[in-house]
Image: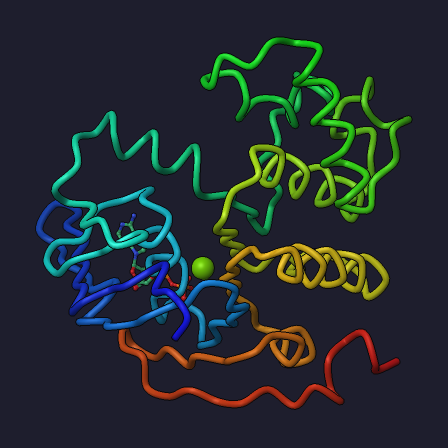
Length: 239
Ligand SMILES: Nc1ncnc2c1ncn2[C@@H]1O[C@H](COP(=O)(O)OP(=O)(O)O)[C@@H](O)[C@H]1O
Ligand SMILES: [Mg+2]
């Protein structure tokens, strides 16, 4: 039986802005097993980003429980949560979220700094991560904005994986990319998954979702279905 890496039990997230209350999630229960590569699909505003932010410990649920590797997160201190996030989780966003005044190298090595890893090792690991993400070493001294969107996303993936996280969370990672860059990103995720990473990816694109192992459908803050992907319609095998 595969290990449960991420478990959500009846997770509710309510946003309060002044007098206005909005439900992000209305009670989501979900188990993601070690080595799974899952997609999350659903209309805009259905709670996909909220769900990923909960799993990634970027935000706290209003109620319900989240377990990462069997540990209930609400029982941890803020410091311990930050540590779990840094050691176990890598994030990839739709708009890359790179720091534009830093170089590509400085962006990629960032997650290693709080771990106290010395600079020469950071540089080596940043290079390895960039190559694994389908990037080129000539980008290292450049600033992110000197690169195309597809190249910036490869840098962002390198930053996400440089710390060797067991969990990768991606929020519409191909939402701003052309077909060729989309294929590179998916190829990288499949390779990382083959090497053991557990991956949860939000996407609007059925041809991207079809490259994963399981598709969860979310609507109005609830998981309303699970679908088997049609592998023959994965973006790697279509025009
Ligand atoms: N920080 C926030 N403050 C207030 N409402 C929010 C916030 N983030 C998300 N929401 C609301 O929660 C619901 C789900 O949003 P989100 O998770 O971003 O959906 P999706 O990623 O599927 O488009 C939406 O109604 C959205 O307006
Ligand atoms: Mg979103």
